[in-house]
Length: 191
Image (cartoon, rainbow, N blue to C red; front, side, top):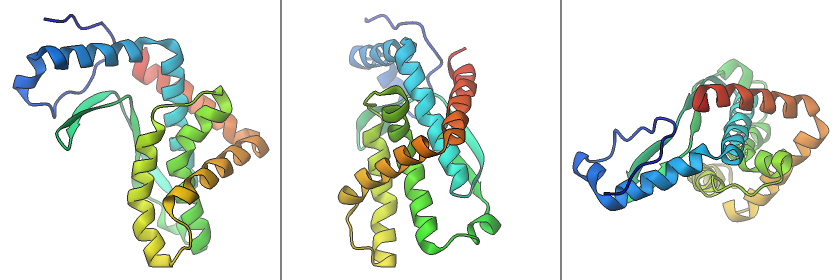
């Protein structure tokens, strides 16, 4: 049986109990723990989620909740998430001040903020980008249909990421808010 590295708690509550003791699962979990114990990865995870948090608030999100590392099955495939944030409520009064275009742009930026911030602030590519894009697509496709938007998610995604990077370059207070949130998240997840 493979040995599991020490590291942060990982939520495995969605994994069938019999799978937890299988060698391939133990090896997968060990590799995930190794990834999570690397300081560079921890910083990227926290900046990534910190950026999502800040941009969720900018798009009307409230009561932001951070969840730590977890392993789960998606379409019978084992998936590892280092961390996630989500807004548990929406400030409708705040959103009423947005035009439809502003609302769509703000929501799109919230999806892209994590990977864009890691690329811009840490000068790294981050593996979490693929999940962010998948979630963006799930949101964007019906939004595109509803509002008859001309571009596909594939062509919109790089533009949205670049708009987040431009925001970070032009508005240092947002960059600082992300870095402060990243520090706070590091304390919660890895201390």
